[in-house]
Image (tube, rainbow, N blue to C red):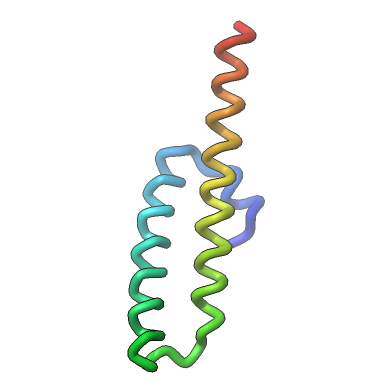
Length: 71
C-alpha cells in the first residue's frame, strides 16, 4: 500500500485499516517468535504501514482543527 493511497482515505477507513494492520503485526510477531515466519521483513513492512496510517490520521485531524479555528 502506497502512502499516497493512505492519504486519500477518510479517517474512518484509516482507523479500520489501522486495526487490521495491528492485528496482522501481532500475528506476524507471534509467528516469528515460533520460527514459523519465512519472511521476517514483513514485520518491518507492517510497522511502516502502521506509522504511515498514524501520520495520515494526525495530518487529517490537524487540518480539520485548523479549518475549525480559521472559520
